[in-house]
Amino acid sequence: MTATASHTRARPLGASEIEHATRIAEPDFDLLDALYRTDDPDDQARLLARVVLSAFDNYYAVSRRIPALAQAAFEARDWPVTVRLSKIRIGLYTACIDQLVPLLKAGLPELTTDEQLWPTAEAELLAAIEGRYEADFAFAFWQSLRRKLVSDEWRPVSYDAGSTARRTTSPAAVLKTTATTLPITAEVIAGILDEAGFRVPWRDRDGDAALAAQAIETALEPLSPRPGEPVKIEIADSGFLRNRGACLVGRIKLRDRGDMPMRNLPLLIALLNEKDGLVVDAVLTDSDELQYAFSSTLANYHATNPRYHELARLLYELMPKRPLGTQYSCIGFHHLGKVAVMSEILAEHRKTKEKLATAPGFKGTVAIAFTMPSSAYVLKIIRDHPTDDYKFDYFDGLDEVLRKYNLVHEIDRAGSMLDNIIYSNVKLDRAMFAPELLDELLEAGIGTVTLDRGALVFRHLIVQIKLTPLPLYLANASAAESRAAVINLGDCIKNNAAADIFNKDLDGRNYGVSRIRKVYLFDYDAVEPLTSVTVSRDGAAPGEFDNGMVFRPQEMLEGLRIDDPGLRRAFRDAHPELMQADYWEGMQQALRDGKVPKVMNYPASRRLRR
Ligand SMILES: Nc1ncnc2c1ncn2[C@@H]1O[C@H](COP(=O)(O)OP(=O)(O)OP(=O)(O)O)[C@@H](O)[C@H]1O
Image (cartoon, rainbow, N blue to C red; front, side, top):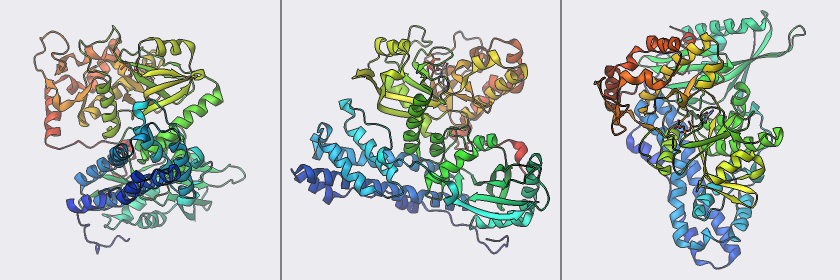
């Protein structure tokens, strides 16, 4: 690709084209028929494995088409289509499983109870997927399907990759390397931009390349670079596409120089497709900033390279503060992310021998949250009934709360809500639990937790990244850090509003602060669509809510329950509009008009043309 004007604008994708490309093929009815007819256990096992593998293949084929469609939509500036593709992708896995489950249940009811068939069929499946790149994905699909079929039976199916687990994966297979010498020139960057292979013109490729080269030079300064020193620029051979943006991701490597050891600088080149062409909007060179742009609290990226293990490993090397499991999720491989996160939790326990105990902070009235002191994760279950301290006078029930956690998993979390990994029928060894927590889980009348031969079986288990709950953070932070946190809390509330999420439990204890000092909402039992909330202009009316759905912006500050008057003032000064009905009504109107405000996912200071 060059900067010449000879490119024509990309053609928007038609609705029927998308529908056609993302339609899931029908299950293999011939195989299903043969499965229903046979009485031979070996045939049953073989056919069951083939039926499921064929459904997985259908799923995988569509899921692999979506990144290319997302790239085409980015090139055509077709933003509604990019949003649609994200939605389609996130629902696809479950849709494929849901297509098969009723057919298997109806045609072979004994599947839900047959203890013999599953292990034999699993052996058949493992033999059939042996050597395939996506074997672990096919196995995850198999386990998800099995879990759905036997879910009423309370028999947990493990969340592990079994024999399909990959022990080592080097990102080298997905990297393209440019070898040059310092300083990195505009021509070298222009070459990297060209290699990305976008089929639309740049607005000012050479000008952007010069600015990007300048930004990289500034970022390299602390690494004591020397003119003429050899340097390698490794860029993932993959587009990463999300909403209105795309990015190139990789690193700059300076080798051991005798007086200096080997040095690595992460690199993210953020691209936009504006009306007049492609633009390099920003260059990020700090691991924390990459983490911010790749956050699992945003919509997932579509990665055009299918080697998801190497991509996840590369992201982990670039952002080592975030666990490997969540790196899979942020490129949309949620089910592998799920398996990886569970393996990490078990490995953390094996390594540290720490016990799961109640999470630090306020005890939940709706959830029970627990963690190990050095774990990266918090685990949660929802109580069947809230405790006596519950704030509201009605409770929608466990299923409704889980629905809200699931809703937040599926939406674009606008950079300000934690993702939720929701497991069902999970078994955890009872030795992992501290005695007090074990007593609480087993004795507080929680119907969704049972004891089964030395293990706790959880009907549902929510896993989130661990944050420092805001009240604990404020109790230990410096004045400047506390001020920054409460200002960031306001940004968080605004981003959530832009995602049509309103947390009617305003209390600041529902928020946490991450290792990169960003504030997120982590408690979702009280979230409602902002567009369904009545915003009251009547400041004098008593009580916080009427029917749980009337919000008085004047009471926002009080609702946050931040004790320190200086911090309350900082919040009010930074976000006066949050206390005004006009702001909330304006946001509701924008959402109803389909105008979703842009979400900023890197610091404004990193933009090349500010
Ligand atoms: N992701 C997380 N990181 C760190 N701590 C967490 C996280 N999620 C929950 N906690 C801790 O667990 C406690 C209870 O969790 P949560 O707020 O989800 O429960 P809840 O019952 O819904 O709360 P509430 O009573 O406010 O409705 C929190 O106050 C916090 O201390």
